[in-house]
Length: 199
Image (cartoon, rainbow, N blue to C red; front, side, top):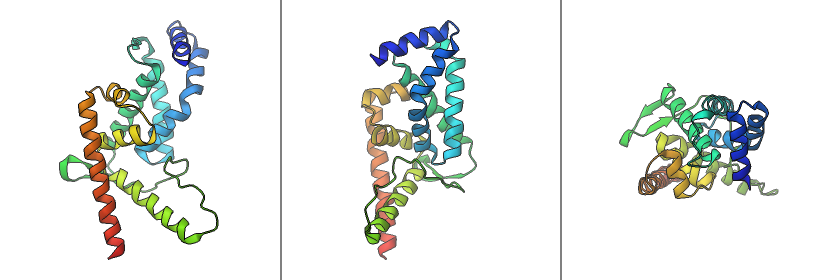
């Protein structure tokens, strides 16, 4: 039903109906922001990237052919804009496998999908969960652009391999390979972090 509605709204947008596009923005703004936040780990950067994604989508709506869903197309725009931002950022260094380590000066975790649940009044467990969350955030920031993108899409957004392949414009096999390497790298980073704290 939503697919059909999206198609009608996109058709109206192509005919110059700005209110139709406003409805699409309302429908997807939270999802687009969540994707950007998962990639950039900074609320202001995520807001800017989300806004840029909608501006670009509006500007190029005439190029949308409907071979994928509108949201897949919008998701691809968002991910690509985030990757461009990460590449242009001066806040990274090269590490093995050409992965990039991004260390933002001001990390804002508000609204993050990785926020732990409230654990009642046990301060010890709360502290452990908070530390684990911070390690996961740092681990994500240590991944390359493409590895981070597949982790965000699969683990935080719940996209299927087929949807991820459409977004990244590659085969499902490539997605599965990237996801395997991203998870392995993330596990290594988290294991090293745990060893440092225990040592």
